[in-house]
Image 1 (spheres, rainbow, N blue to C red):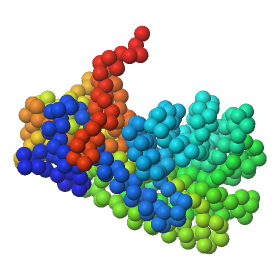
Image 2 (cartoon, helix red, strand yellow):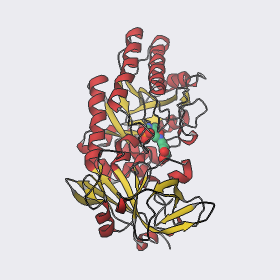
Image 3 (tube, helix red, strand yellow):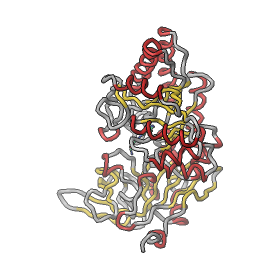
Image 4 (cartoon, helix red, strand yellow):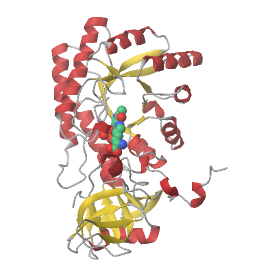
Length: 431
Ligand code: LLP
């Protein structure tokens, strides 16, 4: 199967972490997301171990929690002793409620409001990753009023095109994020930041994009950032102590994609860093990375109940399911690849080509086009694999459809991570 946590049992049912998905769907209803906790922990450990081995002891991953944000994941992050990347006061609130020590958090975003800054500083956010100088002024002012010195990083755009979907590319000069090195604005921002009394500039951040399979853009970005850091030492006498390289490593969604060896990628990036450090003579900064997708995506699948099929002779076939873009908008947004299988009949021949349609009043509400599965009957359970990243976190209530239940599996037993939304939840803010 696509990943080693997926198997088929004697009943011909798809299993995740040993649990029968058809049984779970019957017991908990659908749409249902099921997450393999061991897989999440394993992914965290791959990063943690490789980063401390290759970058040095102080280096650590900070989970990009936009990929999946709920109390459960922050508790796991706490137990695995990693940092987090947060991008809103809502994510910060959730992390605090989970008991996460937010001194190990990086607060992102290209438009942090004064409320965000106030809330972040009051709760002891470790670093703000500053996007622009008006934001820096606000952080400096609010920190000043509180009589503290707030640690910050500056988000820089290294001018790298990683060749991924345009909507998830972020490191190019004309990006809405960060400050460009190429235009000279980054150096102006460094000079300005160093004159502000209530912020402490600890270093820099960059993030080139997401779902990237090629190592080269990561190595290029690391080299460029280290070169830039060493140029600042010469020009301004300023030496950065932290370099945060963002996230972006690709995940295998379909057979045609490779399963990346993240530890090997980290080793390769570290070679570029070490090279540049030895040439320039700067002190090697603490390296932080912000994996999101590659921590949670392959821990999870989503189960749906098939409503039926529609065959349009000479055109196409549809299989309709009881979820869709409200629980997974990624195909509608980015035409994302997914592997689809009929979880209740894994041993039957896949000879029915169809498009998987969601239940919304919207033609674009599709989960995948032209997949091959056994011809489904009403009531069959259909699985979409590798749905742990940017699915629940981007879910909506479009058409007033409640968000799904999220279950965890640990030691062969299931437990609830997020309850299914009820109809009462849907109207709780309606007056
Ligand atoms: N750090 C920063 C500053 C980011 O903006 C992101 C992702 C990450 C880290 C994590 O990147 P990852 O390791 O997950 O690739 N909604 C889109 C993905 C948007 C990514 C946004 N930033 C999707 O569903 O594909």
